[in-house]
Amino acid sequence: METVILIGAILVVALIVGVGLVAGTRRRPPLAPTEGPAAPVRPLDTVELPKAPPTPEQAHAPPAESAAPPAPALEVPEPTAGRLVRLRARLARSQGLLGRSLLTLLSRDVLDEDAWEEIEDTLLTADIGVGATQEIVDRLRTRTKVAGTRSLDDVRALLREELITAVGTADRSLHTLPHPDRPAVLLVVGVNGTGKTTTCGKLARVLIADGHSVLLGAADTFRAAAADQLQTWGSRVGAPTVRGPEGADPASVAFDAVRTGTEQRVDTVLIDTAGRLHTKSGLMDELGKLKRVVEKQGPVDEVLLVLDATTGQNGVVQARVFAEVVDVTGIVLTKLDGTAKGGIVVAVQRELGVPVKLIGLGEGADDLAPFEPAAFVEALID
Ligand SMILES: Nc1nc2c(ncn2[C@@H]2O[C@H](COP(=O)(O)OP(=O)(O)OP(=O)(O)O)[C@@H](O)[C@H]2O)c(=O)[nH]1
Ligand SMILES: [Mg+2]
Image (cartoon, rainbow, N blue to C red; front, top):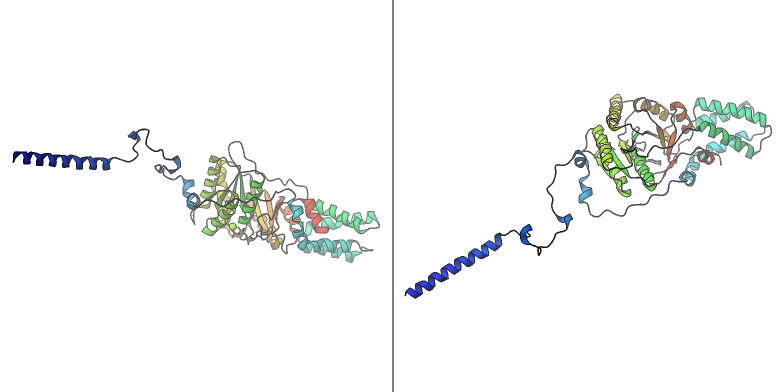
């Protein structure tokens, strides 16, 4: 009997020890650092690091970008050299009429007062403006008198020279190179629907094609769709976008974009702003504030005013008001492929003393060209 009790006791003790061992094994943490060399090493990118609180830039950054599936292959934009020459057919489509009318008038055997009046009207209809038209006509009158007989080629050469003179020889270089300690900052402004966002997208492509790194700032916070539109342009060529929530203060988004650009050492920050009517003083004040806030980190390198060439002389009025608020440094004249009259190039430059630096010649991604007076005038009269 005693033996049976003893065996029973031994079995109970053995059972308890066995259960304890199994439970102990389960409680051990897997892959503990003290496990020794046999423990498998996990690749770094799968280790879950404790999350730091987001910086303001991260808070504005699009959440989808990091979580998104692998990005599609980036597009390779067309080289920028000689773009205007390649796109000149677009320009000629709408502008050819001006050149043809002028050439026909100037080749007349007799240039009487009626003919000169017609020449004047043609220039005015092309949106060249009163002052420039008067100058061009005066110079043409003098030169045709001196030249005497005129072949079509003579007239074409004369007209080419005078129109190039009227377009002027301003410095049209775009300041996009970074400073030693911060990126170049370009602010894109204008009234609604002129093509600001499209211009930012096309310009980002131009800069990337030329080997720059670009960051986009979506300071149009009125509509989320505006930031989406900009981000889509950027993601096609690999330019990240800093954006804020809908309704955020545009000045703070612009400020964040420049700060992020500085931290990430990008070459150029392009800031897209909301369209605003030049007649709304509240919105114009907001734009002035945006620029002042951005300038806390250094001067803005370019303020590009985007004008829709099809709006004609109204563009000149817009330009005047914007220039008062934000010191415009260059004009981007869009939609010159449409029914626009190219003379607005001359009028707006004279009015503001600010050069046209870029022209938009279509909705396509590579339809933005540096403005070259000679190629532009050639397209008008050839
Ligand atoms: N034909 C033509 N269309 C253009 C050109 N540039 C822009 N557009 C078109 O103009 C329309 C307005 O362009 P956006 O870039 O959205 O204009 P926006 O100034 O940003 O507009 P808001 O932000 O609403 O003020 C779009 O349909 C563009 O495709 C151009 O050079 N030629
Ligand atoms: Mg826009």
